Length: 113
Length: 113
Image 1 (spheres, rainbow over the protein chains, first blue to last red):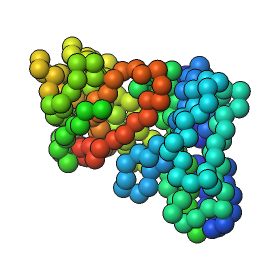
Image 2 (image 1 turned 90 degrees about the vertical axis):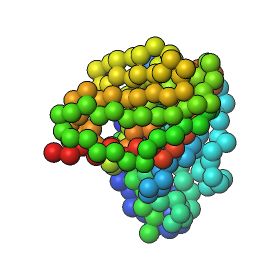
Image 3 (image 1 turned 60 degrees about the vertical axis):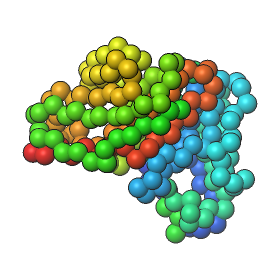
Image 4 (image 1 turned 30 degrees about the vertical axis):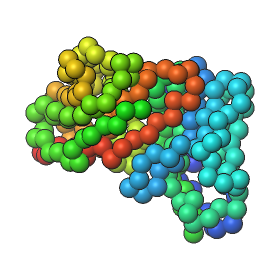
């Protein structure tokens, strides 16, 4: 079956611009995570959605970052007024509720110039 | 989550079995051992998990010692495509909440032609 998909695969933007990253989770996976990974670094948790519950936003690094999940499926991560330190690979993962078996998308490589 | 210790890097000849060790001496009785890997420029990939019995799936086998303080991931016939960073983590299987993943430095496995 189809895995997690993300778009765009690459995004280059100028400092100060807003960007939107999209994630399509595996059908039936009600849990959705956003992470980011800087070059050579580990995973940094950003935000978690589970069904209709309020999202866990504890990992968002600043108020320039926001995410939403419409209809319990597709999610968008928005970064406003991008900064160079936002450059990273943004990864989306989905899973069945409460499972540590997470299935990751290929990521979006964001470069802020 | 219990701390894990893995070798920084390993090499394995193509076609041979790759045996990746992980120490988790502080593992609790309700914590599982999970393995993920990350191939260069791709998102992390779930491999396998287990509690105390040995587990096998289409990708790998997981051998957990009787005292559960260490485990070994076995890729039975390594191919060049198995070159990746392999992460061993221990955690409760389900809190039915935010199961955000945190990876350590992992083992960089290089398959030699």
